[in-house]
Amino acid sequence: MTEDELKLLADMVSANIIRASQESLTTKAVLTTQEAIKYMGASQSYIYKLMMRRQIPHYKPMGKFCYFKREELEDWLTNSRVATIDEIQQKANNYCMKGGSHGRRN
Image (tube, rainbow, N blue to C red; front, top):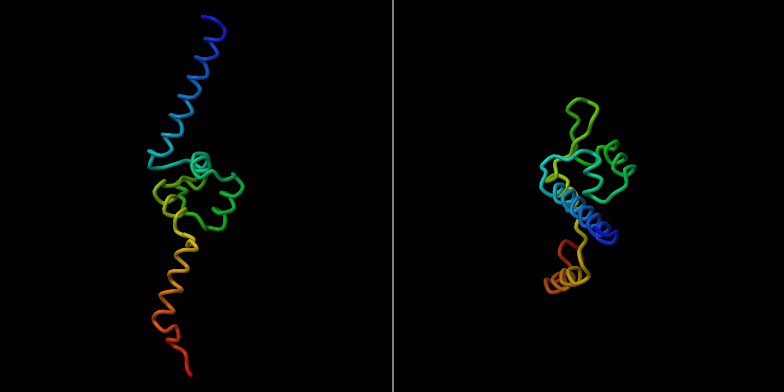
């Protein structure tokens, strides 16, 4: 094999390893802390801060190592949806159409 062919083969193997690693994060039910960091795309310090403040669901079965359920991470990541401008405008329109003064005293 030529040097160029070897480089191409090495690039293909590296790409396959990276793809397999990423696919395993989306199929595994339980993730280690490092896997959760990669899965979420967050920094290690941010994840540790969330864990310390008990703001992210995690498990410590032996009191030392932390684990995360992938499904719970997905739920946690998607529980604070921000409304779009169109959705806010639609709510405002609906409010105005209903009279908008419900609960007010004249």
